[in-house]
Structure formats: structure tokens, C-alpha cells
Image (cartoon, rainbow, N blue to C red; front, side, top):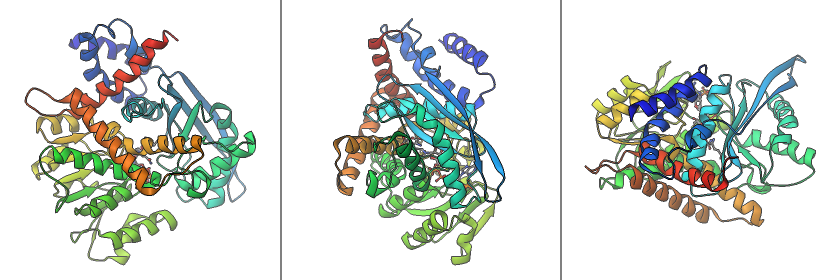
Length: 447
Ligand code: NDP
Ligand code: 2IT
């Protein structure tokens, strides 16, 4: 068995040797899906996984824009159209200086499995730019977004490819991108999700990824007759996903001890309550400040510079910042400190060795492609509402989101439960996500 996995990975490495994050994502899937393929004749010998690791299309383009000092800036834009077997390409746009082909291909690959798990008809894609939004004025952000869309519009559409937000792309950026798309196409369509409430956006979309990651953790805890009530929770990041994960934890009676950004983390032993979270939302979303400024309002808290929060003793950990932010040592520290549950809000925040530690310790661990799928699922619900030219209430969307997260939990259990009752959510998510896409690819032939 091992040798089939190894020879597959050797081939993928030969073709993508300079793409470490992409290889990391493929390796995790191959190790769980190939043994399943080998046992199931309909998938065996069809090179399905080999077809799935090759993007259907990759677009890269130049993005020129003029900064506030009048200087001309040049960035690189990308859209990876990974797999459209079960629906239009769907996935976010990331604006961050670390964006490159490896990062976007890993994200697009994960997205294919994640979108399949949502039960909604969405293929997988991802895009973005190496543009750094930090410290840019609103006008600079607008000029960049307009320039970016002045090329991307050729490659997307409401029935072909529907982008959304990710790191560095939130409501403000989606607005600027949508404005330029609408102008160039002269049509008002649901080509992007995460839109504003008054122009086609879905209620609960901003909250959905963070809420979903907590709903998923709640489902995992239920398997142990446990809940968030009275639990100490460590959250990383302080962006969209982290903020709403924290909000839901507080609503469910948990105590949020930390939040972070790329400069370090804040630790508030008294707990970050809803008033403190409102301060953080204002600080990050309106003032666009740094998490360390929390101490100006709440001097009893600590700011730990240059560190991630995994050393803080907790019951539950929610990594909600970025890829590979939690390594093997961090995982061991969490386990030794009594952590019982890790639900990933970010994409691939735990390294492979960290995941092995969680599995060996038999604690509850959910990979992002299952636990953070609430964001894209609610994007799918936004697409549905746009097609219907209709709007559901907050309660209706939240109810559907909860139901989708519960379904994903069931799918992971179906394919991931071992003979001793332990649920390997990584294996479960990979196989459940794979089966639906593979069946569609088989039905559509070699295209
Ligand atoms: P935001 O841009 O809103 O926030 C990102 C947060 O992560 C910030 O606090 C940022 O800090 C921190 N961060 C980013 N890069 C690093 C880094 N290299 N080291 C440490 N901290 C870092 O993004 P989101 O909250 O939307 O995204 C967070 C994660 O969730 C990503 O992995 C994304 O792919 C994933 N995700 C997002 C979804 C969505 O709907 N938005 C859906 C599913 C997954 P700083 O400000 O210092 O950069
Ligand atoms: O990683 C993700 O799932 C996202 N950034 C959200 C994608 C989407 O289309 O809503």
C-alpha cells in the first residue's frame, strides 16, 4: 500500500517540486484516499487523484496601480481553477505578500474537498495577489481592486467561477471588486460572494466561517457528551474567522483567553467578553489597528510579542490565522496542558506532525476542510439567494449553516470512524469529499 502512495507522491513532487504547501496538502489527502481507492474497484485504475491534483486552468496576470505618492506599483494576480466536476469553481481571493503558486494551489486543492463536503454544487478554486493591504489607504485598496478585476473579469462569472474573500479580502475589497465587474460586464449578478447586505449579500456570511468552526467543535464535543460551557478556549488570529469564532464561543458559555496577529498574541486571563470583542472588532475592522493595542483599553491583559498562543493552557484550541501556524511542539504542549479538542478555522494551520500528535493522543481534531466549510457553504447559500432574487432571514441562514455543519460531521464520522470508535476526521473528510467529486468525474468521462 505504502508504495502506491509513495510512487504517486513521487510523481506529484517531480511535477511540483517547488511548491511545498501544495505538496503538503496533496500528501495528506493521498495517504487517506489512495487506500480507499485501492479497495474500491470503480475508482481503481482511473488516475482520478492524478487528475485532481492538476488544476483545470491557471491564470496569472499583471496588476498595475498607482499609489498615493503617484508611484506606479506592479503586483501579480492569480486565479487557480482547480476542479469543476460538481459545480462552478468557487473559492476565495487572498491578498497577502506571501501569496504564490504553491499557496494558492494548496488552497484550491483543499477547496475542492471542502466544497464537496458542504453538499452544495460548487467546484473548487482560489486566487489572489502578492499585494500587501497593510498600511494602504482606502483609495489605494480601491485602485488595486479595480485594476485586479479589470483582468479577472474575463475569467469568472456567476455560472463559471465565483470568488469570495480570504486573508486580506473582506467586505470592503469585495465591494470594490464587484463595482468594477459590474461596470465592465454591464450586468448585476452574483459573481462574487461576501457582498454587502443591501446589494445581494447573504446575512450571516461574515459570521459563517467562525460560527461554523465552533458549531463543528460543538458536534465533536457532543460525541463525548461535552460542550463549550465553562471551557477555556485559545483562539489565534484576529481577523474575520477569529472574531466570529470568538463571538460564538462566548455565546455558548466558553471563555476566550487569547487572540493574535502576525506580531504576537494577547492573553486576557479574565476572558475576552462580548464588550471586549466589540472593541477588537472596531480596532481591527474600522481602525485597522494591531492586536497589541488591546492593552491600551484593557491593561490587565498581556501582549506576548512574536509568539503564537498555543502555550496558554486551554481545553479547546481554534487556530484561525494561517497555514502552518501550529507545529508538533505546539501540539504536544496543547495536549500536555489538557486540551481535548482542536477545530481548525484557518486552512491547514496544523503541520502534518502536529496532526499526528493529535491523532496519537486521540483527542478531537477537525481539519479546516471540514470545520471551516461554513464560510463557503454560506457563500453557496448566497449564490442560491442571488439566483432566486430572494433574501433569507438571519435565523433561516444560521439554521441552514448549522444543518450543513452537522451533515459534514456525519460524513466525517461515516468514513473516518475506526473499530475502536475513534473518529479520524482527516480521513473522513478526505474520503467523503473525494467520493462525490470522483463520481462526477467518472460520469463525465475523460475531459
Ligand atoms: P483576515 O485577513 O480577516 O485575518 C487574518 C488573520 O490572520 C489576521 O489576524 C492576521 O494577522 C493573521 N495572519 C495572517 N497571516 C499570518 C501569518 N503569516 N502569521 C500570523 N498571523 C497571520 O483573514 P480571515 O480571517 O478571513 O482568514 C483566516 C484564515 O481562515 C485563513 O487561513 C483563511 O484561508 C481561512 N478561511 C477564511 C474563510 C473566510 O470566509 N474568510 C473561510 C475559510 C477559511 P495580521 O493582520 O498581522 O496579518
Ligand atoms: O477558504 C475558504 O473556504 C474561503 N476563503 C471562502 C471561500 C468562499 O467562496 O466563500
